[in-house]
Image 1 (cartoon, rainbow, N blue to C red):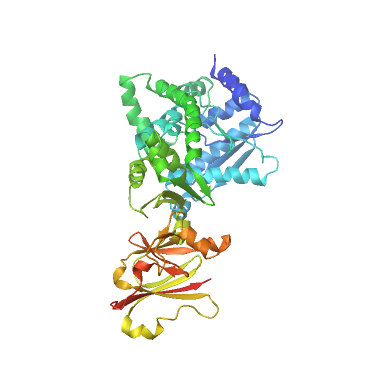
Image 2: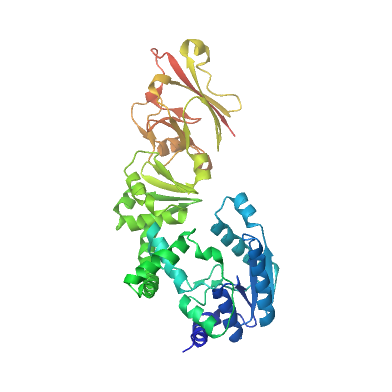
Amino acid sequence: MTLLNQFQQNWHSHFAPLILSEQKMLLALSGGVDSTVLAHLFHQSGIKFVAVHVNYQLRGAESDQDERFVVSLCERLDVPLLIKKIDTKNYMSEQHLSVQVAAREIRYNWFDEIRLNDITLNHAWVATAHHANDSVETSMMHFFRGTGIEGLKGIPALHHSKKIMRPLLPFFRSQIDQYAQENGISYIVDASNLTNQYTRNFLRNSIIPELEKLIPSLQENIFQNTQRFSEVSILYKQAVNQQLKKLLEQKGNEWHIPVLKWKKANPIHSITWEIIEPFGFHSAQIAEVIKMLDASNSSYINSTSHRIIKNRQWMIIAPITQIETKFQLIEGVGTIPFLEGELSISLHDISEVAKDLNNKHSEDNKLSIEWLDANAIQFPLLLRPWAIGDYFYPLGMVKKKKVSKFLIDARLSKTDKEKIWVLESDKKIIAIIGLRIDNRFKYSPSTKQLLKLHYTRN
C-alpha cells in the first residue's frame, strides 16, 4: 500500500470527522520535505487548506529563498497562502527566549491570530508535519531530562484545545523521503538541521544513528512504546485523579494539601510529581518537595511561577506574586505594607517611651500600637494570615487558646475574621495584629528594650 493510500485511510479514520463541512484547514508550510509532502498529500486527497508560512529572517537570504519556494509551490498547487515576516532575533531579545522557543511561540500565536481575525477560518484546525521520528526524539529528550508517563508519550496526534492535528504522525521520515523521491517532489533542505547545535539535532544526527547500529529497529520500537504509554496514561490518570481529589483543596488561587495525607500518599514520588508538575516544578524537585513535608514551618520551594510553602499542618501552593503578599518575612525593623494595611516595627529603650506605653488606639480605631519585650523576640518575623490550628497565649492568660476561638469570643464577623493577620517569631505567634499580643512576649519591670508594633488598617 502506498503512502498516499495509508495517509488517506488514517485521515478518514481519525481526522476527517473533526473537520466541519466545507471548512478549510491551515497547514504550517516551511518548505522542508515533511510539510511539502503533507501539502501534496492534502492536495491529492482533495482536502481543502490554506498554507501558512513564517519567514523568521534567521538565515538572511536563505530565509527569503524559502519564502519564494513556498510561494511557487502554492501557485503550482493552486492553494491560498498566508505569510508572516518577523525579526525573530529581536523578538528573542525582547521576550528573553531561546530561538526554538521564540519560533514556536511566534507561529502558534500567529495561528491563533489568523483564526481570530478571519471569520472563514475561526474554526480551522492547524495541521503540522510532525512524524514518527519527531515523536521518538521528543520521547527520548523527555526521558533523558526526567519526566512522567505523559512525557514518554511523545507527540500526540491531536491537541483538541489548541486545534492542532498531526496527520503524518504514524509515518517515519524514510517513508516521507521515499514518497518525495518517487513523485519527483522538490523541497528545501535547511542546513541548520544538519548541525548539532540543538539537543534534538544531536539526538537525530549522532545518538540515534549510533544506537541503530546495535538495534536496527530502535525507532520503530520506541514509537510503539509511545503508543503503549498513551494507553497506559489513560489508566494512570484515572488512578491519579482519584488520589488528587482526596488531597487537593482549592481556595481561590491557592491549593491546600494536608501534610499527613500527602505523606501517606502511595506511591509518593508519582503522586508528588502529579501535584507539582502543573505549577511549573520540574522532576528534579520531587525529592526536595517530599523532604519539605518534614521541614520546619514556613519552609518553601519555588518554581518559575509558584511557591509551595509549609504552613503548620498544610502545604500551600500559590502563585509567587500572591504568596509574597500573603507571607512576608521580616528581617528587621522598618515599615511593611501588606494586604490589610501597614505595620511599622521599631526598637525603643523603655526609659524613653514610658509615657507612651498606655497609648494603644487612636480615636478612629484604625490605628493600633502594641509594646513587647524585645529581648524575648527573635528575627526574622513572619507576617501572615491566621490559619486553622493556630494558637497563642492571650495577654493576661497563662493557658493557650486557639486563634479561631479567640476570634469567636471577640465577636468578629466572618468578613472581619478573614482580614486578621498574625506575627510569628521562632514559630510562635507573638501578636494578633490589631487585637492582642501574646502573654509570653509582654514587657515586665525588668524589660530594658521594647519592640513597638504600629499597625494602621486600610
